[in-house]
Image 1 (cartoon, rainbow, N blue to C red):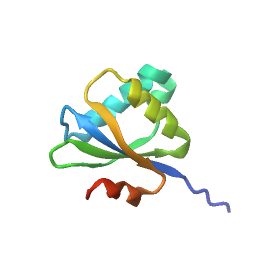
Image 2: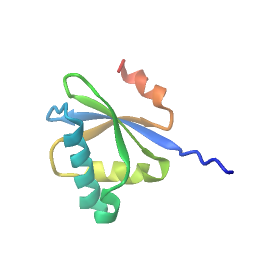
Image 3: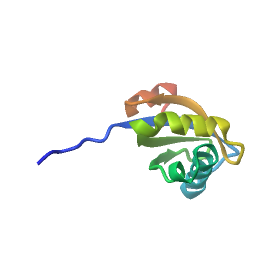
Image 4: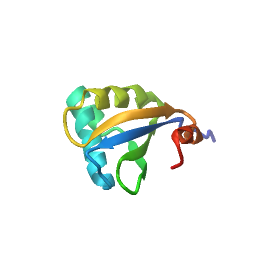
Length: 101
């Protein structure tokens, strides 16, 4: 039996306008991926791990292989809400250096 381990990459984004709904964020991410890379990439697995109480920041997780696609899609997305990268890392605790979650 072979165990496979998934390597993840984590992102901390600012959100504008403010949004506290994970489904709205997920839809914006799906739209951005679809707009940039087409329908095949639109369904990439992206997990919303955390949204701040006031809705100005979030933490996302995706497979390491999809990390660059997610960044490119969010950089070119012209919809709302807009996500702007604060920090990214393969190590989740390193995202804390910008302030507490």
